[in-house]
Length: 395
Image (tube, rainbow, N blue to C red; front, side, top):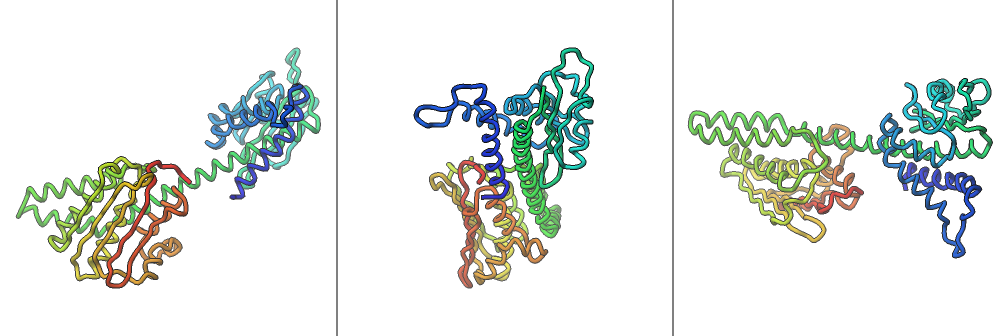
């Protein structure tokens, strides 16, 4: 279990410990004869669940506005505010006259990272009948950094309320930290996709255009067809990235790539693509197959003096689609295959990034059991296998 998830569970547990006694004072129905959790427990968990999705978007004005009503329900105070360094992100409750003063109340908390209780003249607003007399303000943190503050306003602030606001703020901070992890993961995935694009070798682009140019005079129609294939391939490879595409789209990209390579190598390159129709609509990570085919051509044909066959096979396997990319080259030592999947070598700039990048992305998306499997031996060719769940559920 990750540190963030453990911290979240601890925060929720402690949050319930402080909030439930406060609520039970106002509700006589706090236990059942069968010993099962009471309605207040379920209500608290439900409210927390309603606030969580918004907070998982990070600390923004929109997320604060969507979550603040639920946070006030958890605290049960007259009003609450969520602030950041630029001011109030959201306010909910009575005494809106204190809204403009909330940034001033939170300034010390944001700079020191320590909670504070505000009373007396600092809360004088001059509004007749205003019941607000005190506020408890607690920092919101992400990875040790203060990113905002949660302020609870009420007629009085005692130790119990301070502890409750502290635990709610801790729970909110955990949600924000999970949002940061999600964002970091998304940035990593986008960086990996950009790396895959960068791996589309300038030599491949140069060779493709040179091959097309060679047909311009001798076979203009063939040159035109290849130019359209090249445009189709690059349009797909360099489009705005998405987490998923379909296996049909990915195979179309592979087909364009193979046609361009076939124009370059001629009859020396043979390829077969066999796909079961029922798996064409399966969602797959963007650019997960082309690097494997490129690797098969690069290593398979180079080992056989510039000729060989590449086979791409995809079939239905119940809840998964199974795909293999095979070449009939001389194969390689299994230790070398292991190094090709070593992402640390990629980070050090050693060797190519295609196989390692795809392997890491599959494990990030589906879990550690869904990485690439490379089967090879000297003199036996190479087969790369991957399993793709039909539902793009992340691990």
